[in-house]
Length: 321
Image (cartoon, rainbow, N blue to C red; front, side, top):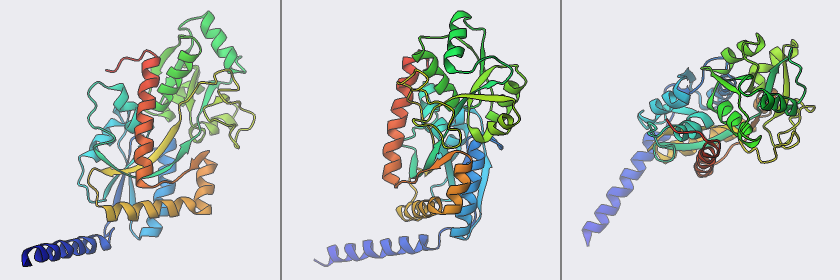
């Protein structure tokens, strides 16, 4: 009868030691890996959050940009990292929903290979056109594209923009435009401003400087309601596409197997940071809408988004590579 008690005692001691091992977390800087380049909307939002977290946890949150492969380079890097809470992914819809749906053999499984920590929020995105063009509405763009198949060119700087455009063109009746992909929104927007390409979906944080200068015009937003920062820009439903459903978002993930104590600490700190008035003000100035969650909440959200993106791409006729 002594052996079960000893086993119980041993398990209890090990559990206590494990808890003590993580009690001081973090004891050194934490790396936050981004799937998009410096200057992108994701970079701006992540650095706002990283600064707030650095203050609250007493260690530097170091942002590291690893763009490429539709976000999969950053995703694969974090998926293979040590699960000790010192390497995290600022996971957007690109690496966690679009990239896995766009490839026959993705380098990771978003549901299996990561530890969800907390949702961060949702991006607003707009369809921007070069201001020299005569289009004043989405309907005018689609009418022109129907009459001139392939003549209009559109840029994409991330998979969110790519999937949003694919769904829009599919819902509009298989309208044809010519796709010109870029590695990030900043480079793509330069060519829209110079009219080398005519339009693209992009976040306001990347495009609003050009808009203020009168070089770009927003025609429609992907938000379900009009943005407080651009109340004159209609939603997709108002523009005639009520079934448009693509949403752009971000969350924090670790590699699979991050200890529960660390997940809880990080989730609590992220929720606390996103509740700060100064942080919310900075994020909403970028027209990014903060929205925290539990670890389980992010897990469920990620599975639903992966299924949604895969369905959208199938319906748009996209063939996984």
